[in-house]
Image (cartoon, rainbow, N blue to C red; front, side):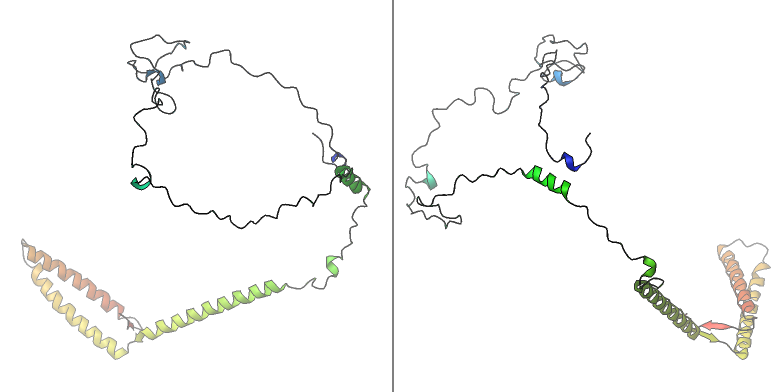
Length: 267
């Protein structure tokens, strides 16, 4: 493999390689496939056949080659028919009148006009210049490109300074943090407005009401528990309802024993 070089631009004389002889198989081209079901088409053979790979199949009552398995129409259908010809009044639109003759107009030509007989082109212009060799010689003799010494990056004006895009990104991030912080503060203020602090008198009054309710439910519950046998569905449901109400009332009274009691005005 040749390496890329400017000296390889000049093409070398092409020597065509010797042509190898055409490949020809030792087996005939019309062999039937081996171990296939293609040969059973239009035949009475079951499953696969020609498992031994025979060149010719044993002829049976049906052949595996169809009569019309070819391109186009079946054989014999391309013969002319003497009865199929143009009959009277079967021409264009059912009449034998020719269409009206119109003068053809040529479209405007876009191509340049044909030169006249007096305008003879210039002949005999030839150039003996070999552009490939000339280009190779010019590139070989040309001077290499000079590398300009760049200024050290430590002596540049923006050395040691924060880029402008980083300051912009930092400002955008800080503004987003400020917006989120303000949103949290406003949400906290809204939550505080929804809460209502109950006074000590209101808490005591609410406790008394809950205790009275607990006593009435407890009295009803005690009357049910002293029954020897609770054998009806109504009594069972009443007892379960009383137990749920007593448990809920005890939880509510326990919550009111705290120092500060807040009420959510949104519920």
